[in-house]
Length: 214
Ligand SMILES: Nc1ncnc2c1ncn2[C@@H]1O[C@H](COP(=O)(O)OP(=O)(O)O)[C@@H](O)[C@H]1O
Ligand SMILES: [Mg+2]
Image (cartoon, rainbow, N blue to C red; front, side, top):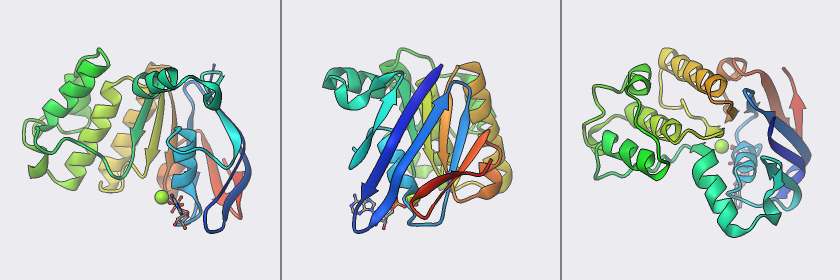
């Protein structure tokens, strides 16, 4: 089943970032988008995840054009179906890691899975205040929070930027396993070619176009 279909997207700020870009994401599929800094990767991810509306083109999620959805419906899709792992991960600072996960679990009628915490290596630090944790620990807690929601599409922008190589590839494996087991898909933006090539499809954003390289 198709999860996301983007057609003929173009976006200009000071200069044109990309032109006529199209992309499809199916269930159990993982896609990486690489490109040099400033090429527009984050902007494209914001458009695909409905945080930003493109100048031109359309994005459909689960078969529905998002520009034609009622606001309530779009809010519901965002809340229940989309998981955003972005650089600025907004964990509630006054809470512990676990309390952050509990909030996510409650809002989406899910439970916090102990096995997820173990796999991410955060089962021991999870009861500490967010502010006491390292950047890498906070990053893994925000990944746990997103997966606790059980989204159908994961949008991730440099999700392993604060992690060492070994932990980064463990986190990638967890994403892949999650997509397989939950009929989900992932679109990953990264400048790390090694991590990118772990995905099924790899695209490069270059010269305003999205070129498939794997
Ligand atoms: N909201 C915005 N308003 C104006 N310019 C923006 C905005 N968002 C991004 N840009 C510009 O678009 C370019 C690409 O940014 P970005 O998508 O973050 O690239 P990447 O993630 O590939 O490094 C940058 O020059 C950035 O300044
Ligand atoms: Mg970026």
